[in-house]
Length: 256
Image (tube, rainbow, N blue to C red; front, side, top):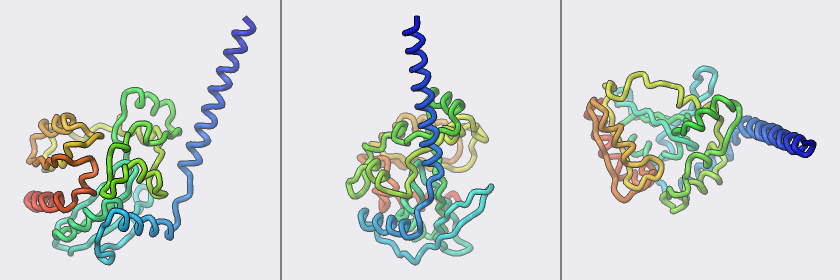
């Protein structure tokens, strides 16, 4: 009996220590100081060099927007007051400049392009939803729920390695942020969306299965277009810019 109590006590102690360490690590990572301007510039220079991206660096400006107490960084390509405007939202971990070539090519197509560094997570399984309620202030490494090792950039480097070595990329995310996606309802059901939608999808996308995105696409009743790239991976908006930008620009001009 005494041995049983001792084992239980040790187990409880281990659990408590684990949670304290996890919480402390989460707070340290979430409150980590942002990279300075010199580091940010170096990361951008390396991105252009490593991925062989050629753009006119004078074609865009950088500014900030205050929204609900949060300072959002913006990259702005301006084609003029009468030009259509494209707001570009990057995905998990990355930031607008990660897609700088695509934004630049859309600018050359005659669009005003605004990219901002809002980086939401993608999805959660039911267990993660439960964890989000229980551990709102705790954070986890993104690789625990999102496998980026199968996705390659133009340089051949897998996305996981690319992000790991990037001091600007988001590598951990709180359960609170993950939970927000699970508890926030769409303003309208998919079937009632009226805004024209273009689905851009890559055949070898290991993150969003083809059947999954096509099921959502088939439920849409609004004006829609499906742009499908064979033999390409998830990073089609960075690896296949010259193939993607023209048809995307053409369709957007038709519906805007």
